[in-house]
Image 1 (cartoon, rainbow, N blue to C red):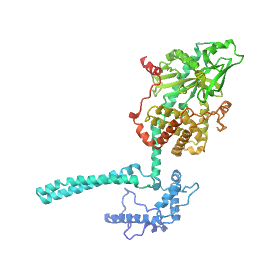
Image 2 (tube, rainbow, N blue to C red):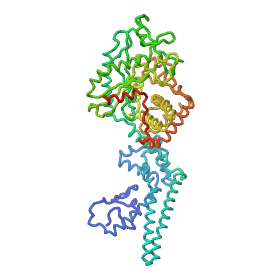
Image 3 (cartoon, one colour):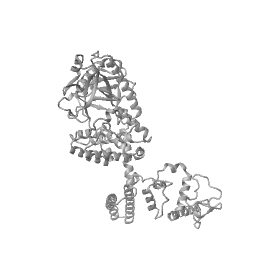
Length: 629
């Protein structure tokens, strides 16, 4: 008696054998004996076992041919049997679409696939053997492995031939023939290697589309982007949380001291309101690389009898610029003149609050209050303040104890802001934007960071839990930075200004509200990134990308916007750049997206990282100040 699964040469196929009076399932082979189990008393001998294994292999080959000719009903029954065996596995596998069904039909020798379920997918999912793509390592290593194997066989053949010639001849002629056999060996090895390389190149260049090639390319692109995000862009929540907490404590101490030690006490002076507003990517969950830079708004307080009156300034500066007029509740009298002489400029016959004068006062005020704060925080960290003309002051924090477990040197940009109500602020325009010639210091910019945070919070609630919209923004910012390392000036600086973080975030908001938020699931990361890149390309070619909040009436009603934003004049963020520059940026953007895996591999090397130029001499001196102490 033979064990189950090992029959003689004339045994019937397992699909037609009857075990216990029942027909054996057609789609499964009979179970083989478990390895390591002790043989029974009636176990066959070694020869019978060998014959049984040989017949079992032949039956499996026959079963493979029969399986191609089986009917659709039997395939569905077998699929149902497999689905019943593992109820969790069928749910975990993705649905097989039209492409997968066509692939299965082509692989099955003309047989029809089971009917598709709702949405075009297979009701039981793809076969695990067909769903798993070929390993890139095995495909890449096939030709070198074949070359090594053939070379080893050729070497063995030449060695055996040379040894036989040496033993048969027994004289110098046989020895010379054996020694000269190395020349054909080298020639054969070289020809074999050349043939393998030629076959590989022909297969890669003109072999035609291979089944699964596009799917493998998409998987490789996704894998490269995922690794790029995980290794270079993603910020550790632990490190980011500690850094934000430490920055909050230090800034709170400085703001408290600046409010208490005002140099111009009285009703006719600027003062600090006493709080601060956290803005920027570090507080919106899309910070990249390292939590070493932060942005903080420091609201100021005007004298009690003065109120700001912002309005657009068309023709006086860049689009989106505002001027801040002042209105006195009791009329503009003589007691307002000291404040007007210290913080206002004349524009069109009226006094307007000057952003340059307010910024200079703010820098000096914080610098004078730094001594008391530095003494109180000397056990935790070393702090210094740098001020560059036309820029907000930067607070540098260098931890010097275990108070911060991460020991990261941080730079905090403290931005003075004039509150307008409804979480809107006026901030000084950066000097890169060319101001209008009549009164450059009278222009302000509108900051709606709090509205952006509200919109991001609403999108987080409406989008799926595994939404990838912030991840797309991080990857796009990372690709922009990597591509900028390979560009030459002056286009390198134009590339960074055109594709600024605010422009990328504006494009993300626009694309997010165009379609269903369910499409931003983590599974569609590459597709959503491509949509974002194509949208940016179209905007660059058309030279139009409108500000998302100014004059936009399509924002969801759930995100309440102030009336001032809804009635403001729409602003084109790309109006300051000429057409050839935007066309070149659009071309480089598409090229960067197509070559994203190559750019990630190339410019992620440390030898390609160029040092960041110091924007101002005062900042370099401030960075060296803590070390000198």
